[in-house]
Image (cartoon, rainbow, N blue to C red; front, side, top):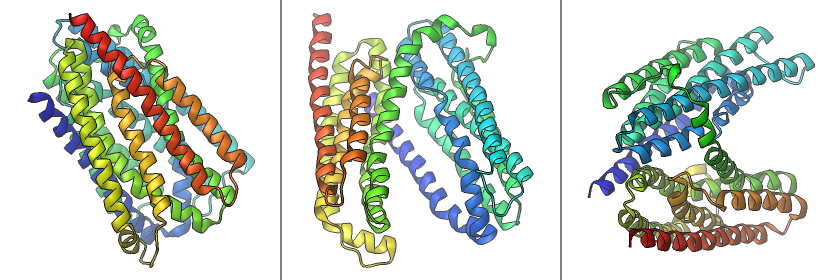
Amino acid sequence: MLETKRIFSGFIANGYSQGVTIFSQIVLVPFFISNWGVQQYGDWLILIALPMYISLSDMGFSTSAANEMCMLAGKNRDKEVITTFVSSWYLSISLAAALSVILFLIFSLLQYTGTYKFTSITPDDARLGFILYLIYMFMTVLCASIAAVYKFAQRYSLNIYLNNTARLFESISTIILLIAKQDLTTVIAGMIVVRAIGLLCMIAIAKKIVPFFTLKPSDFSFKKIKELTSSSLNFSLFSTAVNLFPQAFVIALGSTFSSQVVVGYTMVKTLARFGFQVLNSYNNSLSVEISHLSGKKSWDKIFSLIDKSCLYFFTFSVLYIVVGLYSADYIFKLWSGLHLQVDPTLFFLVSATSLTQSIWMLFFSVFASSNNHGKASKIYALISFLYLAIVFTLMGPNDLNHFLFLGLFVEVVMLAFLLQDYRKYKIARYCETF
């Protein structure tokens, strides 16, 4: 079955992406500290924090455009496909450029007021480094936008390999420049060069796999942007909520508990989120396939894939929790070098919450892949903000497990809501067929 083959190919590619991320996190930090020292590395972390917000500038338009393009595949509507992509591409450029200017003005104001205090780099070097990192993040947004062409051509895996190989070379070039004792601005310039080469390669290969691919501004359409706005904002709202919900506890713990509790929870959360990332990698690949099948109205294949995937997800979740409960102490001992005992209740609640979230996101992908988010994104965003407010307001020194249980309850309610919507959607599609 070609669909299953492509899904697992995308899943493996996402695994490669996770591997590159882990490699960069594990390998780069020691090189930064050993060659720059703790003070300059701290300056680096402060400097790059603000430009990273450019990654939020897209507001879901690229994802919505990719879904739209996939649904148009095979319908001899090449002109509409390229209009959808070009409109999204230039909107991404405009939004990223506008946010870059705003972030630079904020940075300049913070520098002027003395809020940004660097210990080992001069104000001029900090300003130049900030501008260079803005350029780097700007190109990162464009690399993410070009993925829509690969999804349309059902070459999603190829895009992941290209993008993350470029990231891998960025890490290697950074290590080389650090060993050569280069300064902060040179290191960022090296990252820009590698990222630019990666972007050009992705554009060149996109042209080969989609012959009518173009970046002509004349194909831009405000009408198309208007069509994508609703689904884009819903996706942006949903994405923000999904990313915000897990952070609620970390923020609240910092004001209620000791730093040891914060570290312990974060370590448990990291281990639990690894299981979530495995399932989410599969789900990302599945979503691309569902977009194509939605355009073809191949409902039987869609529902068959979802039902099988649900069985995979549930089986994986149960095994992950059981194995985690048995081996968490050993993993933490290897991880930290200390003899730590993991509270089994804490591990179960955190893991079950993350894994339940990944299961309901599987059913949500049926709607999101066709740019039909329904009420789900709004409901989850509202729940997330409400949960965050409750945690901040009411959490006390003895309430950790109670609020973790509340978090799990929220995810279970969301799963029940989406199962109901999925059942209605399934019946409606079958009624269309007959």
